[in-house]
Structures are given as C-alpha cells and as structure tokens.
Amino acid sequence: VARLDHKVAIVTGGAKGLGAADARLLSEAGARVVITDIDVESGEAVARQLGPSVTFLKHDVRSELEWQSIVAAVVQSHGGIDILVNNAGVVRFGTPVTVDMKDFQFIMETSVNGTVLGCKYVIPVMTERGGGSIINMASIASVQGEPYVAAYCAAKGAVESYTRATAVFCAQNRSKIRCNSIHPAAIDTPMVRSAGELAAAAGMQGLLENDRASLSNPIGAPEDVAHLVVYLASDESMFTSGQRFIVDNTASVTAGAVPGDSSVATL
Ligand SMILES: NC(=O)c1ccc[n+]([C@@H]2O[C@H](COP(=O)([O-])OP(=O)(O)OC[C@H]3O[C@@H](n4cnc5c(N)ncnc54)[C@H](O)[C@@H]3O)[C@@H](O)[C@H]2O)c1
Image (cartoon, rainbow, N blue to C red; front, side):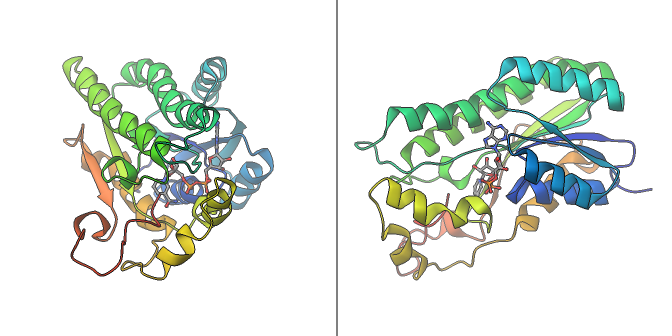
C-alpha cells in the first residue's frame, strides 16, 4: 500500500516550481491530485505529464467564488478532499520605504487571501470526511528580516500565524484536521530564477548578483520541499499540527557565522 493511497489532494499554484514538484511526489505516493493555477497552459502540461491520477483546474486563489466552485468540483469528481497544499504565491521587490502599495496588495491577496479562502472552504469538506491535512507554503521570509522583499515577509508572516490559528481551531473541534506551514529558503524555481528581473524592476539590480556569489548554501531543489509535503500529507504526521517547518540547510541559523550575507538571495 502506498503512503497516500485513497487520498485526494489539491495543490494550488501547481503549474510550476514547488507546486508541480509537490503534485508529482504526492501522486507518486498514491494520491489523486488536482493541480490548480492561473497558468492554464503549464498546468495542463504538468497534469498530462504526470498521468491520469493528476488533473488540472483553472483557479485564481484570490477569488472566493472560484474557491467555492473548485472545492465543489473536486468533491463532485473525487468524492472528498484529504490534503490541501496552499502553495500559490508571488513576490515583488520593495523595501519598507519603497514598497508599492499595488504590489503589497497583490502579494497579500495571493498568499494570504488565497490561504484563508482555501482553509475556509476546505475545512468543512475535510471535517465531513473525518480529517485531513492542510499545508501552507510560507517562507524563510517569515522567520528572518529580508528588507528588499518587505511586503512578502509580511504576507508569509500572516500565513505562518494563520496556520497556528487554524490548527488550534481544528484541534478544538476534534475534526482530525492538522495544519502546518513550510518555510523554504531559496529553491530553484521560476520564481527564484525571475528574482533578478523583479529586483531590477524595483530599481534594485545588482542586489542578487552580488549576494548570490557569497551564498554559503546551495539553492535547493523543489523535491527538497516536496518530500516534506508528502510526509505532512500522510498519516505519518497525524500527531503534528500548528508547526512551522524550516527547509533551509541552515540559512536561518548562520547569521554572523559565515562570511557575507547568506540571507539575501532567499525568498
Ligand atoms: N522558490 C523559493 O525559493 C521559495 C522559497 C520560499 C517560499 N516559496 C513559496 O513557495 C510557493 C511556490 O513558489 P515557487 O517558487 O514554486 O513559485 P513559482 O512562481 O515558480 O510558481 C508559483 C505558481 O503559482 C501560480 N500562481 C500565482 N498566482 C496565482 C493565483 N492568484 N492563483 C493561482 N495560482 C497562482 C503561478 O502561476 C505559478 O504557476 C510560493 O508561495 C512561494 O512564495 C518559494
């Protein structure tokens, strides 16, 4: 029996990067996976590539109406939901004095509203099913100060604290739903590859080039995060809830211990 046999998972932002790796490892572990994303072409391509246990639905996580219809559609097609990976997220560069409020809104709506809405509509369905696992993709940015992506830090901090509130809510209701957050440092995904361009758009070109050279830690692979997602999705993590899991190969605990500023190129 595979670790995730008979389980149904939704992975938001699953068309690329971390979400696509989560979808692959979840399906390899036996789950039926619904990838959702605003990027239809990539989402359909990933689903096709991963085989019949993986399907794609177009979904903007910022929309309450779309969450309602996605959850209803998955319950209809798959019979219920056991695993929710609130993974969709975006980043824009800006310091506490250059932050563009449109960027701030965009980041908050995607990460925070997306996560809040996912919990809101999936918890009742999981409760009916007798339990489940919610995994929220936060970031090392909620743990350490990254002044060049200040709004992103705020959004990930909100995701982290919302995870705890949700976990306690579910524990108090004895719904057998657990909720945890994952906090990766720099992982090789389209988001991180576009960081130079995004920094340049905010007038911060050169920031990452200089600091990448001094990185004490190599950039991680999406699978380094996806294996943890599989563990948190599986019954092996049944007694684990309300926690934050940092996946950073020491990046957050080396301040001052290594030459250079190893935190700068993380998102
Ligand atoms: N890559 C890293 O180093 C890193 C580090 C820490 C945290 N994270 C977080 O992990 C998550 C995934 O990051 P990634 O690096 O794979 O990013 P990515 O940009 O490579 O992929 C993100 C996916 O989310 C989708 N998306 C964006 N807005 C959406 C919306 N409104 N509705 C639905 N889908 C939407 C995009 O189309 C894309 O397919 C994000 O929440 C990110 O903040 C990434």
